[in-house]
Length: 161
Ligand code: S3P
Image (cartoon, rainbow, N blue to C red; front, side, top):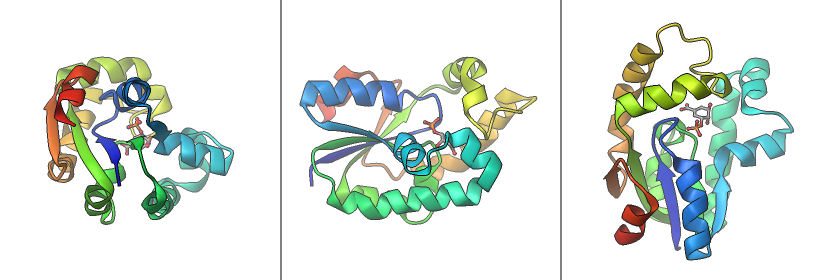
């Protein structure tokens, strides 16, 4: 199974880089958030506010169950997906996992502009602190990726694979 899973914190560039790579490699591009939004007919923010985070995580699990069928896909995962269930283990079986490890300061800068679409951060009054704490709690999962790329661009990723 020739898939590439891009994992990492919100704002780490999974979607942007995933799209670029899928064109370069002629792979199919899949975003787990878009997959869930299409199936639910709601935005991620609506799903969180109407049904709660637990429901959203169940949808991510459903994606993982279907992922067994994928081949030659680049998958941009939601930032929390690797941190629930056995998702890292499953992704490592189904393809190459790459942690897009972007400096915390860059994440804060990007997410200051984009936090309204991220229900976990949208109402944050101390974004830097919330990002730091969430990132620290997630590193143990991201760290299980086959590759870790510091401040990646698509050239760095192409060299890896
Ligand atoms: C989340 C990240 C989001 C989205 C949801 C939850 C998280 O995806 O899945 O808001 O738990 O980190 P992005 O990483 O694409 O922002």
